Length: 280
Ligand code: DAK
Image 1: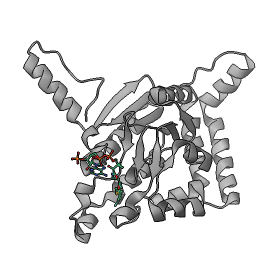
Image 2 (image 1 turned 180 degrees about the horizontal axis):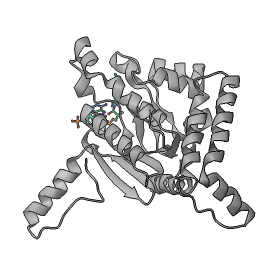
Image 3 (image 1 turned 90 degrees about the horizontal axis):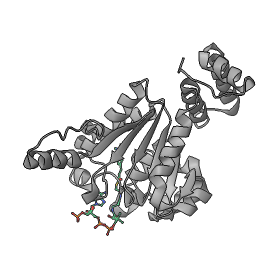
Image 4 (image 1 turned 90 degrees about the vertical axis):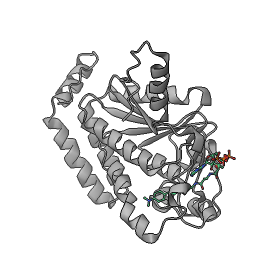
């Protein structure tokens, strides 16, 4: 996987250097880290970051690598200022048979995103369409630039959303707004999406990425185990009854009293100092 932090350009040969940069730039994702934040940037500008099988495989591998890395507390997935992702790669699917789709078993990759335990922030600018909108909805917080446009336009190409769009969108914005979008394929603006409850915050396009990173660093300064359990508890709300959810929350709450970070967090509050969390 491409790692912007580890790409080696240490060569005096200009041709080799150019070739290494070109190789790096042609990777469908770019991976970086900033202290406790892992960043994956979608990088297929020629096709508006269409989510090819290769991109999805590398994205999911990168998310799992960050999830396993003790030093990373929060993950950011970003697009460019122009586009987050215009959907799954239509070229990959156009001539596929049912058996091809079955054998590719793409659902398995998307299911793996669902199992990432650390919070994921989507930094969305420009189009978030089809699988792109669904990818954003697999994240836990969506920071949208004012130019972001969300849509499930699959109906325009003879299909329906295939990575949870009909379910997650409906849960996020309600049946009637979801029907309006899914049955017509219309795009909604960042401000509409915010009003509907699909995005967490709308920010100026010039610094949408910095806004998402700032938020990621704020979260990453919190106790890492509490962060993961908080995500787990909130996600549980979509899958269970209120009383089962409350019971689940209570168990996770008790569980945190087994961590050193709970003792440290409460002691730091009482001693009026900054907590020094260790993730234990
Ligand atoms: N796939 C492949 N190429 C795409 C693409 C896409 N989704 N979107 C754009 N491109 C390519 C265009 O073909 C064009 O390539 P060239 O012609 O230059 O070679 C280039 O990107 C620039 O696009 P446009 O020329 O069209 O740019 P415009 O600014 O005029 O229009 C647009 C931007 C976003 C309105 C337009 O490109 C557009 O409508 N794109 C398609 C949007 C769309 O229909 N998205 C939904 C795709 S279906 C599943 C998981 C997920 C999915 C399915 C199953 N499983 C787990 C099984 C998801 C399905 C989808 O997302």
